[in-house]
Length: 216
Image 1: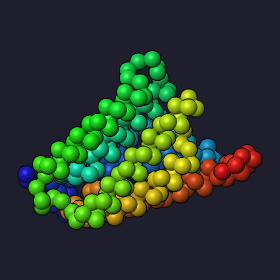
Image 2 (image 1 turned 45 degrees about the vertical axis):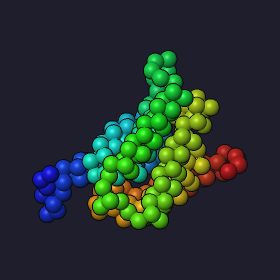
Image 3 (image 1 turned 45 degrees about the horizontal axis):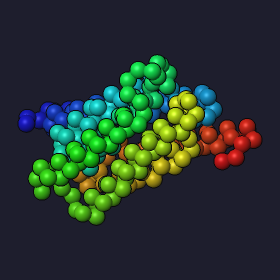
């Protein structure tokens, strides 16, 4: 596959597509951060979920193209939660319910991960310890949105619980360690500053709860 020159760097078409996906992920972070700063607490704007949904679809394609199979299930599972969060603002009587959607996403993720490990050549694989780090990171990274989804279903509205941000902090560190072992920087650039917004949201939400007299 021919490479494309971008700002002096030679990138494959999948890496160029990955840049687009990471730009959208960065955009969603800015949108959520700005909305939270204006609200004085952790906010969940609809644009965040739209950007997340599109970016997740793009990065799933990139993960397949670059044979980053460990990352693929996370994009699929998280994509289901993004779509469900968007439905909180619309007609919730249409489409699949939360449980069928989650089961479909998890099943697809597991099958694709298993297929990828069978089909990918050894050159694309990393050392076993780092593979374990990546699996732990992706488990945490996906679980945080399932946790957010579950609590949003209970509350009847889309929101970010504090546990979501703690999981984001821990998961970002594991994912950064794993993705830095891959041959392309397309994945780790999305995690290198991933700790900042969760930390800021924790600060905003803690401050809001103290003002409201609630407990952390």
